[in-house]
Image 1 (cartoon, rainbow, N blue to C red):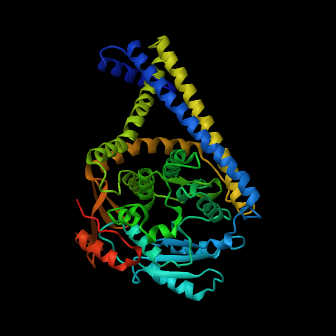
Image 2: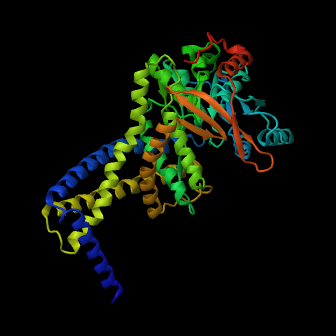
Image 3: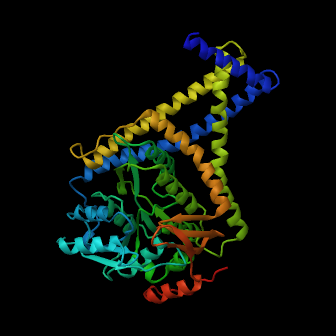
Length: 507
């Protein structure tokens, strides 16, 4: 028997087996429901297209701005020399990236700048490496402070370190820029953020936006991260988004030292991420977040393993379920948390059911088992939806390439290369894994980040557990914790200059 004949016979036998299991054959009624479901999914895709169009328009505007500011970063009507900026970076792993960022910082046309690097303690490698390299090199024009935060048992380690960094800033600074240790600065980033805060009194925070693009050799798991980034960008389609991005977030220094809107209380009261905390404060008091187009930047996708991708998605979904204010209504907290966890499940499961069913319907038609008009309509709509998806993805990739070229220049740009098979697999696997991760977080309400376990309840961090490691096997043998109130009191005593109005109570 020829291989083709054997494959056809196996397919026929499989279809007959499925038909017998389904009590005969798949009727047109079942296919009609499939068509209705596919039309609904296509409608959701159209809504997504419209939202992504806003993203693409912003990206194209960014291209023109980058071309105009490549040689001139001055802002008309704004004297940048009067607006000193303190950059606070929490360094946990990528100390070498921080050094490269400082070395490559553009100084011409920028406001006065100081850099505060914060590590957990002076015993670990990041502090030692930074201390040695900062002493060995001369960086004229950029004052650099290396500080230690100590361990936090009342909020996330990153939030605790960022507040400690704020306490180390110079009194001459007007603005504080929180940057991720692996984030990238362009010539227009800082001036755009300063201009946004200086000219808009109702703006509480200004945020940049980073997005990644694939280069040759990008592995599959990095494409899963790209799928998350692409979908997440729809939240920043306007210059007044509802959310901030903590990787590049600028605020007024004075707001911390007067505890405006109880910002210090909110961050210390079980906060997991400062960007989500700021977003909730702005929504509560009616302030706005600015996302200037010129503060966007791009960077090549880092090679990731599956474990790294999974940890990243878990942390992002964990952040979405956090609330920083204990005064929120408990029922509202519960409903919001459930909706946040269930939305990706509701939206992705119908898509997967349709795509699992579609090969079966295709095979029945090709082998002559089903000539129903509804089945043919299903196949046509499915093919049109797939073609539309490919067109959208091709346009996004084209705009990404133009933007990356504008940011880095043709001479230094790593070539953008999108593997269509990996991109499709990455998007599909991401849509499949997000509901599973959401369900797991909904059940456990805990996450491990940087070796530290955080326990969540009522939208707040209520427990911080650190591992006790066996010195011989290097395996975790136990988890230790400390009293939440004791840790908070120690943090208040250390950062007394913030003028904290009251010590939050654990409910």
